[in-house]
Length: 372
Ligand code: C2O
Image (cartoon, rainbow, N blue to C red; front, side, top):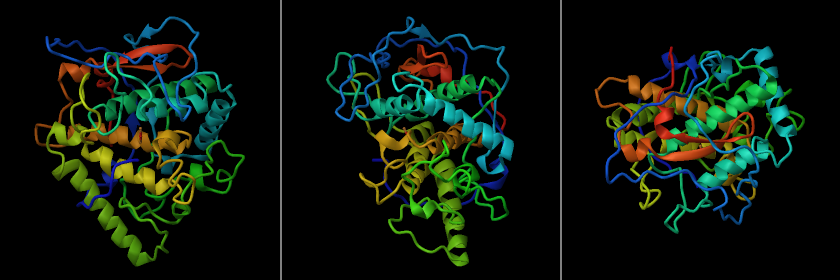
């Protein structure tokens, strides 16, 4: 279900590691084109999905507009998952424990967060005035939708922990350094003995056996789990670096290539993923999902199941960080999209209080970030 395989090229890694401060927000005004056709927020009642992805009936407070960012909240620092200390891993684990304990009918719950991803990406929400369904992958909605999803998910976890400093870690798979601790392996929080068992809230039953440490990540889809010799690891590192360089630098000098094809109300979904969405975003999903599961590649490699695995959010933390990073690369054309159809497209999410909030893409572009 995630986009296909590709072959690509060259280097960028180490220095891009560390901190991303994640604060997504604030408004942004834009001039509306007369012919603009942004998607309005989906109506959660106008949902049809045979896989059970539709959100629960919403009986909460009136839908709020997300227009004021709470500046009393502390900045949240997203740390690379391979550098988390034990105390942070314990907090991270506790956050998912609490999330899993919420009743399924709560829009913030672990299951409904996963279902929300499924609903937005698996042909569940009808588009108003159209019999087609909304799709947030394979086009320019991808990065912004997932930034919001992470933002609200992170705020839900913080609220459950009663700790506003909580931030999701990011899985720094683009870092191919061979110096320990390794970044391009399954992070400890998901893989060490303490956390890789059924009682851990960060455990997911459907992960590829090839993700077992000390195997390193492979940005190209391989269906077989091969023994990673030192020579093979060296060539995988080289190939991964080349892929990163192509997807971020040479292959994405302009917005359309990086963000993917445009997709507006009345338009056709899925005309083309941006470079980062296709690879390595898509291939890391595949690498993590279990090829022997039913259906093959569940959970991470199948849209409707992927957000059941908590690693989804660490994976997307890195995708989100790479979006910011791309804008810092030289060339002059690496900027956010300014088309009003894009900026005014709306989505609904559950906030940390369980209320539905309406967001516009323009509100996702002002992430405060430092990339070191
Ligand atoms: Cu909505 Cu990584 O996928």
